[in-house]
Image (cartoon, helix red, strand yellow):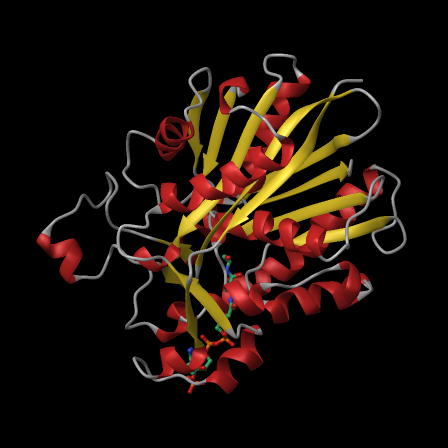
Length: 329
Ligand code: UT7
């Protein structure tokens, strides 16, 4: 059977490190509160002019370099983001131009935190169907461009970064075996950015009302998220006759909150070593988390050839996804 296989991974985070102590100088917060509630110690912040495409381009280039692939051989570039450089043209087009991927189509996917898994699913479908042979899937967000630094309950958790997966066809049993995607649109009010779209087009009033920033009911998102993460892991494992504890070599969870991941892990009975956490150093980079985490997990030797790897995410929408892959490499 022809499957989409992740054949290279790249990641990029901006240079500037913002510690919890740095934040405590501009808002009423402190290192102890942030670490106790989220595990975050620091996050990265983009430089002026370092837009989402500028985060995605080095992540993409690193993945291509690892595989030694010429960008002209790419058939499609998909970028998952909630912070596009502009509404249009899409961010994938900007990446396509910068890479010189002259033979590739380009499109963006907006599905908030699980957007990277929605983009990965789309890329996998292009490959599994035989429409394309080489697809670059990138998740990247410049979250500090939409964070309200007067709202301490959201400002402390987000950071900037990007990750990229190169997908190619495989017929030897490796690659993406199953995809679970879902949503509950009735919960959209719990996490959104109300301004800037056709509902609330930009105006002096929307700017004055701070509508171009993230609004989140963190408690509700946290509670619903934990139940959903546990549910989707159990469901995708059960329908593939795999045990989440014994059979999955590595669980790659969207990094929304380290305490949330600990709680999901303990409900599932996972060995913490199989559910790595790197939110400590990046914060929540929305579409960037799973690429950054995969890159770190590979560097730390947590993912090996033939392992079952399960990527799971949940976020605004609400929307969620879980992707089961047999790792090659
Ligand atoms: O990736 C997208 C999906 N997003 C998520 O999954 C996020 C899920 N939610 C969370 O991670 C947590 O809800 C947060 C970390 C965002 C917030 O933690 P919380 O325990 O839910 O805090 P809270 O908003 O309920 O606030 C508890 C208290 C409040 O004080 P009082 O009213 O009890 O006196 C807040 O004012 O903590 C206060 N607080 C802070 N204190 C110091 C809120 N933010 C801060 C802060 N520093 N940064």
